[in-house]
Each structure stands twice: as structure tokens, then as C-alpha cells.
Length: 342
Image (cartoon, rainbow, N blue to C red; front, top):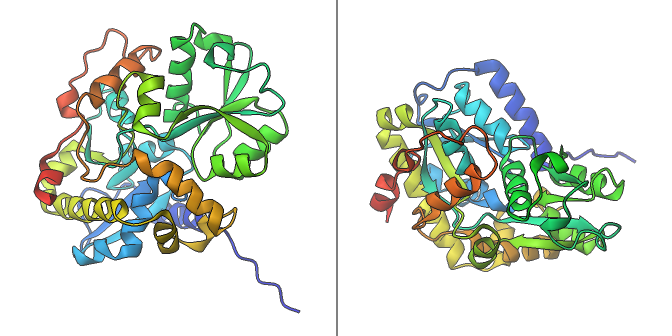
């Protein structure tokens, strides 16, 4: 009997990403022939970044005459590194990196804002649930994040500081997402951590932990962070955007069309369009994960009012790079392209 080894879609994408970057690193100064664009995603199988793959599956990139290659990295901070180094044209990741990069002298802007909530969830293991009942209990604990310097790292530190716990009084541990996060929770390498769906849905389904802070809705983000929190977006180097406006407009057209499609279709219909390997816990659980996360998405790609101010306030609470530094929020995003797409 022959056995066929089937790699998960995210793993295959990671291999393809490595091969592509090795072959053509630093070649993102212009769009290739036929409108080829390389976009790095901070985890293609994460529901918070679902519009990237969904746009490809719906054929909207092709409709715009674009040949888009979607690559994947397990954490947004690594995806950002690929953009800064010139390996890709854009990143689907968290908007907050645009502020962090600006104070480091790198000018990057969000051109399509996918969300108006963070989409993140702080979970705690069943073993630690009795001693971690709020962010005030983070002191002395090991908390999982996708990567050090990632948006989950930023938000975890903010929640701690907001609740009277200094960043040196607990540890953040880079455990990625999916199975690596779940294994760390099971082995007590972390007592809790910040992650997204479908990882959250799998943890709850396996009864390995519980939700402590839910930021998948605008209301949940406002309660935890004090306002709308624009997170997943398409961001690109500002100079590149200015030199390639026609291509950026086509990308905006495709993504806005996807966001509108998502707002008029059920979680089950959305799940059916995605690669089957993304449904690690089964089709039903994957659809449930999408349903829980859908409220975070915008329908038009526009930056939410007061969103950038919320992100700046959150980052300034703990990020030494921003303390005393001036940030020009108007240069961290643009609505030029999504306004035309509408």
C-alpha cells in the first residue's frame, strides 16, 4: 500500500518563500513582466490575514491583470524584515509596524486596511487559569507570542503595562502559531499567550485553555486597548508606492472587492474557497474560527477614524523606540487607492 505524504499548505508556502527569496533576494525595485508582485504574509493560514489568499482564490488579482505571488513567514516581524531588505513588494501584516519603522528611519505605509480590530486573543492554559484571571496576573509568567518584536509581543506588553505589570516582570516567548503554540501550552513552556484563529478555535476545541481577553471584535479591542485598533493591512515602502501607483491601485481594487465579498457571504462559503489544509481542525471548526474573526474586518479597506492614534498610544506605553520620538501618522497610511476602488 502506498502512503502519500501531504504537507500542510502553510509549510509548502514557507518552502516556496525560502526558495524564491534565495533566488531573487533584493529584486523588488520594480514590478516584473506581466505585473508580477511578491507579497509576504505574516502567516498565510491565519484567519486575520485571510483576505490575502481569498483574493487569489477568487481570481481578483488575475482580473486586475496581476500575477501575485503570496509568500509566508510565521510572524509579522519577519515579514517586515523581508520588505525592508527589498525581497518583496509588500506585506500583509499589522499596521503598527509602520509606526515602529518610521522612528527607525524607514518609511512604510498601509495602502489597504483590512481590519479595525486587532483580531488577537489572549488565552491561558487550564493549568494556569486559576492564577491568571486578568492581565494584572502576568507578573512572573511566561507568555507566548508569535515572535519577539511582533505585534503580539507589542500588544502583550501593552496589556501588562496598562494593568500595572512592568515588561521586566514577565517573559514573552516566541512560539509561533498553530501547533507550535499549542504544544508550548500543553508542555507548560508558556502559561498563556496571544494568538489568533484558527489556533484559538483548536485550543478551545481540545479543551487545553480558555479565553482571557478577546480582541476579535471592535468592541473587544476598544475594551482592551481603548479604541479601534487597525491591525491586518497591506503595507508597502512609500517610495515604491509613489513609483508604482498603477500597480498599487490594482491591488487595492482586488482587496476591496474581496472585503466586500466577505461581508456578503457566510463563514462556510468563505471557508470553502480557502485551501483545504488550512482547516486543520476540520471544516466545521475552521468555519467557526472564521465566524469568530469576521467582525474585525472592514468592508472598504479604509483606515478607521482614530485608529492610528490608538496604535500610537499603545506603542508609546512600552516601546522605547517611540518614547520621545515624533511620529507623523499621516505618513503611515493612505486612503488614496481604496477611495478610488470604492
